[in-house]
Image (cartoon, rainbow, N blue to C red):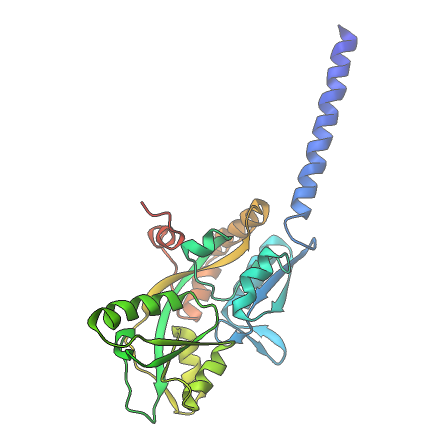
Length: 279
């Protein structure tokens, strides 16, 4: 009986050691490289994310820098064009995507999200022309430009169907470009009539255009939730990021960053709607 109890004791000890080792392995496996949080981001989207003298700058780099510090990891940004961001994280090219990425039910089937702010869209046109659209419905038969792979293309097409096609008018024609800057240049060269862009990015582009571009829509169009995306099933990393964000909220860092970049925090209802889980 004593020998049997001793054997059981050794067995329990072995299980305990195995669990400890497994826990350590899971923690190390949370990121592709232990101690480093690699981030896929399109560095052509100021003020959200861009390169300033070769260094990552903007809302997302600042936000992820704070997240990584609470995780005790070093952030490393991988400049990737927007259309390839999700493919990169699902293909294990980097740990997360932080690049003003809209949360949608379709994307939530492919990646997991940690929602962190809200934004919306604006319409930009050339100041040299007479076109001043307030909504997508004002662009029936016109060419509208967008960064390639943007979630708002679905919004544009739906708005076109309702406001244009359903009323016997020609649809809005969507033209996609690799970067927001290329899209804006297409307006100036006459390749497109207008550009649909994130409100913050649109504001920066207009500011840098020297008066050649203007925003004609009022307020954010189609307000949306943005999220940090990560590979599905990486619950350890998701938990670490959520814990870091919670700590940022408790210290006020989260609220200060949102205020600095003029974006808002999403509500639970808005997050559920974005994820497609709202009842």
